[in-house]
View 1 (cartoon, rainbow, N blue to C red):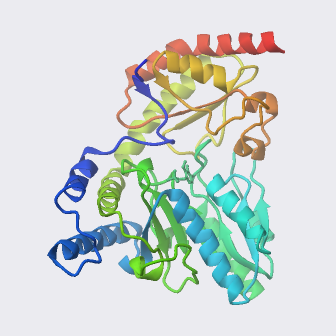
View 2: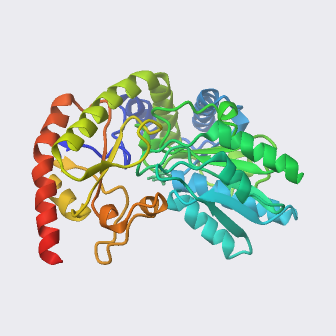
Length: 394
Ligand SMILES: Cc1ncc(COP(=O)(O)O)c(C=O)c1O
């Protein structure tokens, strides 16, 4: 059945019409390689320069500090592996601090570093998924070279107090007499949050275009001037030797167009999405016994409504919703064979019996109040059927 209500905007978003329009010429006639020494190539290079300036000004950065990468995952890998290995090579240390709530792009990059002699400390989060600036500062030591804390969580929508975390990192680094680089995975933040790198106080920031109406497979890494870095991609000299490979001109144009569009409409986005998620949260908590909202009641992305339904199972709920034409998510891939809970929910201390009944509904501004009503009208039966099926299998 065709999906008629799309509630999985944290997974990906539809390409914005403006981004598509901006991309089309570069998928057709303007096909030049930006390294080409002729008009077609120079035109592509100029297009990338313009996109770089646009992104830089939206982040309050200099154009030279912007790298275009493949997906958000690549941006994060480059940030963590590229900076940590440069610091280690310079003999500056080999310890990385992150949190228990991060996306696997961060956690698995850190695990990779452990294979090469790094140690990693995961600072804990509270029951809302918030990490305290003190917890990050306490996790740092005289060997710390890098701290990575996400701006907003993809599963439960919790927003971290990045400016305060940055101040705590700077103060602790000063007392340790060292310089520590701060990275943020801002992949889920671009639609609703201010990405000014000085206000956030970060040295590295990762974005992914398909989360904000840009094309899939296209990302950004902001890298503050002077940040030590070993390129993770070897080859040609593109992106000032920091990311080899012929640039994906169409995707870069689409990313910059989409980012400009969402960043200039953040307030409208926030109020439209907040209205819809408030409707969902109030409706679910009123009509479904044992339903709980996950994450922080206020410090959360406006488009995220994440619930746990004790006694239910994510996969049977998602299956039933899909049959009704509603696209939703459990928040992360849940291993239905073993019922392993999401690491994010486990990090918040949610008991397993609740975590296996997680449901994430992430709206976009194009969703409507009528759609939310429809979802609210079917959800009680979907949860009840899932609970009944789970009880039969126990
Ligand atoms: C918080 C977060 N970080 C990183 C990523 C990875 O981004 P991409 O899918 O562009 O590789 C995602 C995507 O789900 C995400 O939500």
